[in-house]
Length: 140
Image (cartoon, rainbow, N blue to C red; front, side):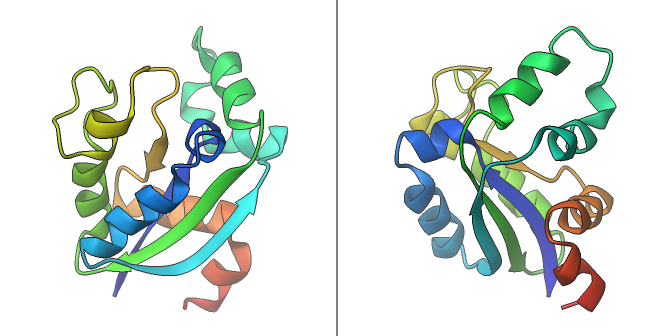
C-alpha cells in the first residue's frame, strides 16, 4: 500500500465538509490509515509550508492553517496514491477546478480552498513524518 497526507483545512472543518471530503476519498477506494482533528501550531505550520517562506503570502498562509481545527489524514491506496488524491482535489483555484472535484464542487476562494494533499511521494513521506511522527517511525 502507498500512503499520502491530506489536510481538511480549517475552512472545510468550519463548514462541516470534512465528512464529505473523507467520503469522496473512501468512495474512490482509498483507506484512512490515520485521522486526527487538531489545531496546527504555528511552528508546525511554518515547517509544513517552509518552501513558501519569504513569499508575500506566507504569513497569511500560516495564519489561515492555524486559525482553527483541521482534520489531518494519512490515506492509503495503490501506487501513486498522492496523484489520485490530487486529481480528486481539483485545481488549486476552486474557480478553475473541474466539476466533480472537491474544490470544483465545494470551494469558492483561492485562499480558502478546503484541502491540502501531498504533491509527491517525497512530500507525503515528509508530511506524514511531520504530522504523524509515530506512524512514520513505525513504517506502518
